[in-house]
Image (cartoon, rainbow, N blue to C red; front, side):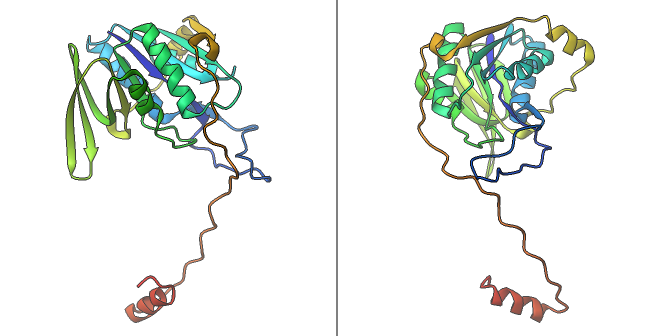
Length: 248
């Protein structure tokens, strides 16, 4: 069984985000980038499924500029067999990305599309669902456990009331959540081997997709500064302070 895993290059989660002075976006110059953490979990799960004998080939795919090759090399170091780079220097919104991934998934004939539940840069949480809709195949979101058995997969999801287990027919799209696994530490030998693995570079036009700007960012602003706390000595003072702020 072939698995397609999407990986996105984002500002590293350890970086303290700074908004540009003109409010047009966030500062990216001189900032560390890495693979989206949820996509790392998806890649780790694909490798574990292969180790269990459920998967025969793992293909990593990304959309973006030339620097995205670094993200693909990380995916190859995790254990992907090969990678596909859909090269596009401009902004790619979720629907455009979904159409591109759907086209690649159909072309590759993969039975499973694994992706992070969301990317930490835009928090859109749309692409996986859109891919499933475009291809009219099954989907399971926010997976905390994935089991594959033949032409079916059992997906456990965390919901408000506990755990929910779904059984879906393959091919299917599965978006993964934080507690599915803990990605492995990349070792130097694996990083070196990844340099020799193939990366196929194509454009959006090669998969029959055009850039679509469904939404436009008007302004980006930082969250308001946290107000200074106050100390109270008694419960009565606490209640009075809460009332003065209209909280009780």
